[in-house]
Length: 169
Image (tube, rainbow, N blue to C red; front, top):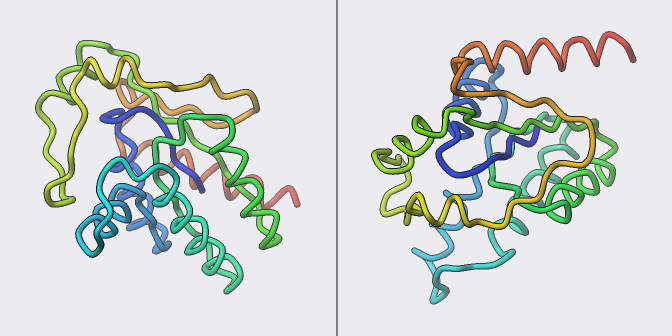
């Protein structure tokens, strides 16, 4: 499962509920990037480094026969396609989820007031979120609107979708 979307859309909240509910390993690119910066001479912006580590960790879990949840902004078709390649390399199926917040005032409030459990995470301001390069998704994927769907309901929707796909195979 790859959970993507703009900062403060609700990705981490939904992925956390999903991981707890399904007991699935959860890889969060923000946490990976924070660890890299904390433990090395590298600094932000890291470019593809955090994503590269997440891909390798996800591939390892998939090759062990485990499911994995990856949460990241995933802003470009290139970054989304790379997850397809990782899943294909492991012979695994993929579920792509885009989290959006359709209520712009609520999204802005989240950006401006949110806290993070990733210590010292550099959070973007509202202008940076709105000006961020973020390409529209070009293939079928699940869209969850966190302005109208609770994290618990979103996790239920995602697990139902996975169960339905598994039953149809």
